[in-house]
Image (tube, rainbow, N blue to C red; front, top):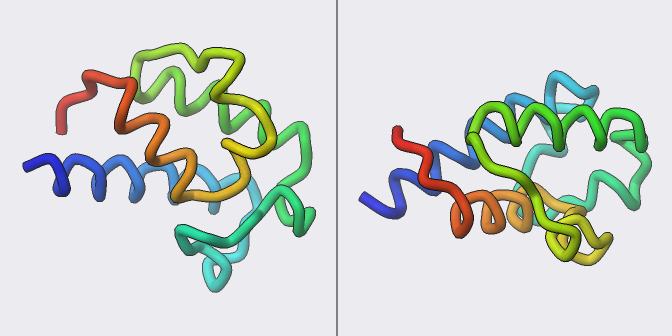
Length: 87
């Protein structure tokens, strides 16, 4: 069940990234959408807001450091570890 929850979280965040302008071909766990410039800083802020609303939790400062918030895989891990969201 845990892996299913993580996959669902990843899929939801992936949809959010697509809505922020990320090309579907680049949607993978390891693609650095920030460094590539595919998602600009305003859309990163909007993504954070969307994630917090959807999964009903607040990111902590250490979660939002650049090293933790560049890829779908990193964001999924943070959300998975810190939310009680039910699928």
